[in-house]
Image 1 (cartoon, rainbow, N blue to C red):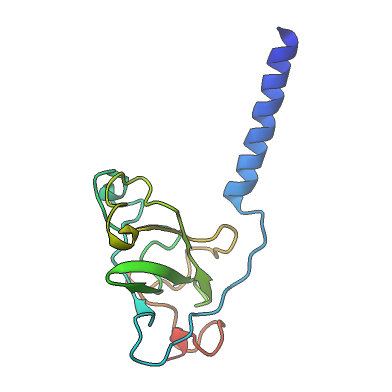
Image 2: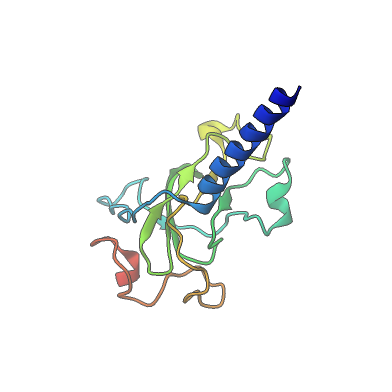
Length: 164
């Protein structure tokens, strides 16, 4: 009995430590490039997108709400560019406070929604900001507006929309 309790305690301690490392973002990640702008006309042209549900919205937690979700330290407050087809988002990138692009990870299903997965193209999705790439949230987010920092800020290559 004592050995079983000792093993359970050790397993719980290791699991807690592993979860803590994942949640604190111990992995080193880098900024991505902003998506390229294809020759017009193209369905894959990235466009600014702001209509995500975030954890601060009560509807985010409602499994019967079938709308795109975003789990990010910035919410909808920084620039988000997405491409899609027929209203279904395929890929999204979000700016950090320095206007560096970070490609959002699309979960295999729109957690916690339990509806909409059978829609054409899979329906709405759940996008997650990559762990370990966030900068402090107390920077130049201006009045909750879905924009990046001042023009010319940040890296991200020639396609950086903050340079326009």
